[in-house]
Length: 123
Image (cartoon, rainbow, N blue to C red):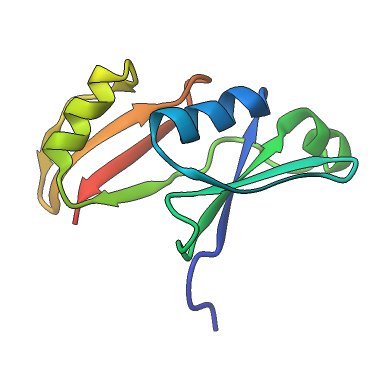
C-alpha cells in the first residue's frame, strides 16, 4: 500500500538555475547534491519534510530513457497564510497568477525560471 508521496521528479534544463530558484526565492533546503556521473539535487521545504523534490538534468534522463514523458509534474503546495505568501512571491519577482477563490479555498499559481507552473492553496 502506498502511504505517502516520497519524491517528485522535476526534469530541468539548468539544474543550478532550478536549485537557486527553489532555495533562494522559495526558501527550500538542499537535502543532498550528489554527482556520481549523474548529478541529483534533492530539495525540500525543510530537512524534516516527508516529501522532497529531485531536480534531474532533462537531457541526461532523455538520453537514458527516451520513452519517458519529461513534462513538468503537477504539484500542489499548501500554505497557512496564502495572502502573505502571494505578496512575498510578487516582491521577489516570481511570476504569479491571480489569487483566486475556488470552492476548496484560495489558490494561486507561480512559475519557475523555465516557465514550469505550480500551484499553492491555503490549508
